[in-house]
Structure formats: C-alpha cells, structure tokens
Image (cartoon, rainbow, N blue to C red; front, side, top):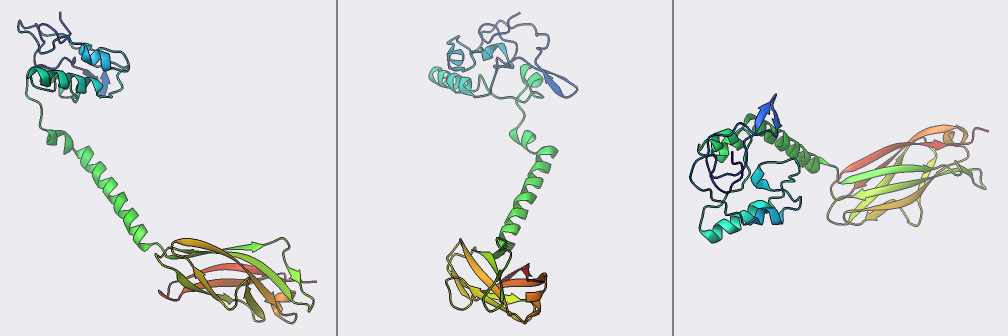
Length: 258
C-alpha cells in the first residue's frame, strides 16, 4: 500500500488521507486504501511542504493532530506546482464530509454548498441581529450623562450662621461633537441653595466628547426643614441648552437632627 503522494496515487490528486466519522466526531484513522493505480502522482518529493512546516510533520502522510493549519505547506506546494506548470491545490483544505468523495475521484462540491448551510445561515442571522441591536443602542444612547457622588467626609458642615452644608462631586459627560453649555438645577425641600465651586451661576461648559467633574455645595438655611432632619431627598438635574436633553440623579441631603 502506498499512502504518500509520491508514486502511484489512491485516486485524485490530493495526498490527504480520508477521515472517518464516528458519532459526528472526526477520527484520525485512514479508511482501507483502494487499489493503487499505475499512474504517477503530481508530488515530486521536493519536500518543500515538510521544510516550511513549523511542527515538522509531513502533510503527505495525511491530516495529523500536530497540524496547526498554518497553511505554509499549501503556499509552498502551490509555488512549486506553479513553477512546474501543474494545477495548484495539490495540498489544500477539504471538508471531512467531502474527503471520501474526492478521494474516489469525484469533483469537489461548489463553495456555496458549504456556505449556505442551515447552521451558517442561523449563525449569520444571529450575528446580524446582534450587530443591528448594537447600532440601535449606539444611536439611542443619551448624549448627556450625569453621576453624583456625595462627599461623606464629613457628612455635613455647620457654618457660622447655623446653616448646614453638604458637598457633592458631579461628573458631567458630553457625548456630542462640540462643546455644550449645561445648566444645573436642584429640586428638593424649601430653603436649599445650590452653589458651584469656582463658578458663578448654574452654567457649566463641557468640552466635546469629554467628561468634566465639578464640586457643588448645597446649603440649608438654619430655619429650613432639611437642616434639622437627618436625611432629605433631593434631585440634581442637568440640561443641554442646545438640544434640550436632560439627565437627573436622585440623592440625599444630610442635616443635623441635634
């Protein structure tokens, strides 16, 4: 029996051995060889495929577990076949289901037989749906985002006039392609005043596609209900004056219950 590509061939041009299937798992076990022909094969024993193999295997002995499918042997063999004026593809990829047919001399199946399989169509549909969902999420994502982190060290500060002050770190995210003017509002019990550190008024410019962190102070007058209660609900709201888009975050104001 001759299992190498040099010398008499076992049907067809491919030197690969056919594979058997056992419960849909490929088993690297050659089928019984057919009677060899007397015609010489296309392989000229140049050993180019062996020399370029990083794993040091001889692909002419058939598919092997050590093969990493780098395709260097395919490129080397095609180059030699081209120089000899013979058809390329002596070493090539092949579906295991097609190996018995091609080893018997049948023509390879068209590529679309392998591409348009139910499994491939289902995979394509699933990935297309995922891609479409990502595009929709990207289109619908908000261009203005707000996060609020209360400063709890200390929880509150009692000012000289008896007012209670809380500090908060706000992070403003502008996903627009240009600088936006953002206004900040505070909603909560009566008697609360809002101040932005290092700024006058409630207008905050945020550069294009960037995030800006600011510190704000909320002060409750001594007679305000929030000043004498342990915790009061408040809400920060930011608005993009150009687009009208808003974002709001709920937080709490800590007073001195005494």
